[in-house]
Image (cartoon, rainbow, N blue to C red; front, top):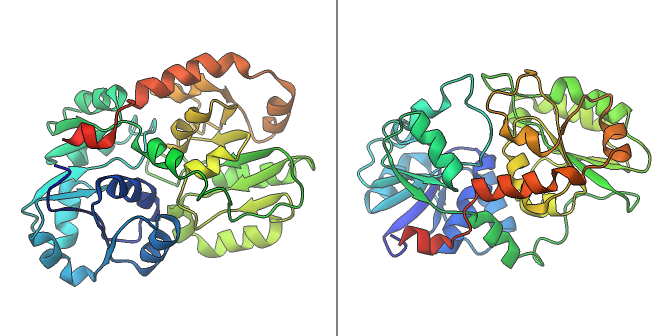
Length: 325
């Protein structure tokens, strides 16, 4: 498969797909087709080893017609709704592993897919539970392998703090149909309670930024300062996580990515239930009011063993090219 006439595709403005498709395409020497100028610019800036094919949406059908394989983070029905009939083999690539899908039928969209690429056994089990019939191909921790080889390139983040001190990343998910987003209720309290000896990076989900751009700009103007910075247009996740001392989230897949670094993790839980919340075992559930005290005044080393075990259960340690050959 790695030698096929193949490509990746982002047909819309979904910035959060980029950190999955770009490393995938780079490691297989597949080009990445993009239609949005912002996606094109971000790919060139942060994934310079990826060959970009920039094309208009109206010409996508012609571009795709010559392919044998097409990888996308969209399901096959969604692809065909966006670009028309797709004759080539399609590969669904997940844009992260999360604990979502316990309330809404997220996985039903994959029932017509041909090949589902999964990180490891845990994701394969989820698709089986939802009766997904696509061929399962386990591709492992390919994004971690990609980042480890390029650490020097990513060593500088586009945030500037006035003090070199401990940093926490708050990365909430968006306002999806399961109501998993913690941002609007939690952020003002986190900002007002931020200790002077802690740096806070706030990375709202791209869907939140796109839908609520004026509101986000007002929050930036109100709260951003020398030790609180928003990070909006920075797709690479692992370089960001590598420079943070702790993670705070809700149901974002970024939490599973942070397991790789085996550092303190904290969770805001809008639903207050544990069904399907396996990641909660890897850290502490907190409120915006008690988060800083919990992080700074409690021992979190007791979670190291479960963090490592969960990471290994989610992400196979196999080379991407080997998995696809």
